[in-house]
Amino acid sequence: MNKTTQPSLNTTVTACPSCDLLLSGTTARENHAALCPRCNELLHRDKHNSIVKTFSLSLTALLLYIPALFLPLLTMGILGTESTSSIIYAIFSLFVQQQFFVGFIVLLTAVIFPFFTLLSLCVVSFGLLTDHKKKWMPWMFRHYNHLREWAMTDVFLVGILITIIKMAHSAEINLNLGFFCFVFLVVVTIASQTASDRKLFWSLLEPTCAKTSPSPPEPLTSPGSNSRGASHLVCHTCHKIVWSDNGKTPSHSKCPRCGEKLHHRKKNSIMRTWALLCTAVLFTFPANILPIMEVEYFGVPERSTIMDGIVYFFQDGSYGIGIIILTASILVPLFKIIGLTIILLSIHFQWHTGLRRKTTMFRLIEFIGRWSMLDIFVIALLCTLVQFGFLSTISTAPAAFYFTCVVVSTMLAAVTFDTRLLWDNCESTS
Ligand SMILES: [Zn+2]
Ligand SMILES: [Zn+2]
Image (cartoon, rainbow, N blue to C red; front, side, top):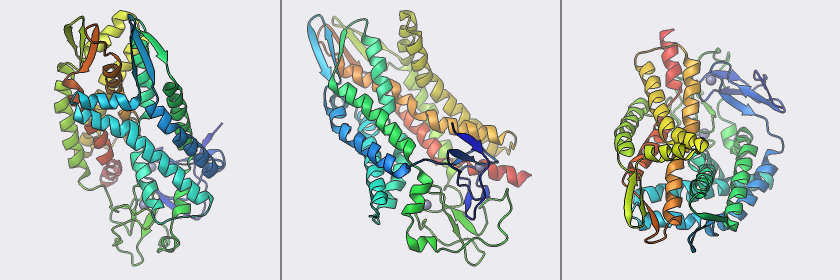
């Protein structure tokens, strides 16, 4: 059982990626987690045998990747007619229905990004394990860190389960080999990501020349200080601190360890977040008002909105699924929009109370953002599986495009926002 402790002191100096607090040493003791004393951000969690575990798990996931995506997932039968779908075919059907944007986003989040993240983990951990480090490995691991939350095989799996429950009353469903491969793929993918110790990976990937950069000035900046206007810059990806050797702001434009562009705060963070948030609000209306799915039953078309789908589950007595879809499709996007608006307004009006709570809320927004794609995945599967000609057919409707735009823009809004701005606001008024 892991316990939470204050960071143990050692000679290294790190900065909290969330609030920018400078700390003397944040390496967690064995089986412990190190948290930021100011904002509660998880700074480091010790992971036993991280490299070996990450390599073996990511390699297993890669071996499962092709069968999980290409083998038949489910077979659905109605009155003697059968239809089968694999994940690749479900995505292909979105393109056939001319839902190019939705199809492209599903292709990225369910196929391309999961493959890239697994490949990155496997290659980098193998390089570290065999001591064959290459120049491009930090680049690969940096992009793994950026794309991890956009790889949504776990969300897709929940989408498959909801599709099965939704259709279980009206059709006979058989699980195929692809389904079991996909379940195993998701489990192993989550395990490989959990096993990777990012702090350890970055320290081992660091080029020797980067390790000899200027050291922190003495005495070290006092607790509570941050990098704004100071003689150092903090990399937002690998969290390396780049110190200046002349007491001025460092002139480095790129992180010597991971190659990420260095900046005191993310460029135009507030303006970009506002713009993406406004885009999300604008798309929310057509996403909820217009139909998202069209069901044709014995030649009679019936279009349903997101809310119609939720009401259907409640009327059907499937309260659990109804609550999951209601949370993923309505409550999560609403929470993201309201939460980010509160955070942005509190920076604008310098409300410096409850900063810890606001930072925790932002972490929750980042964490749950991807689960809104659930409804889109369910619709993609239904559109492929329910193709029984005159008997019954399901196809996408215009709201699928608008809803995907809402999910993508709110996720991008969370990416462009720099939580350190929240704490700058606190310091400038204290
Ligand atoms: Zn912090
Ligand atoms: Zn870096």
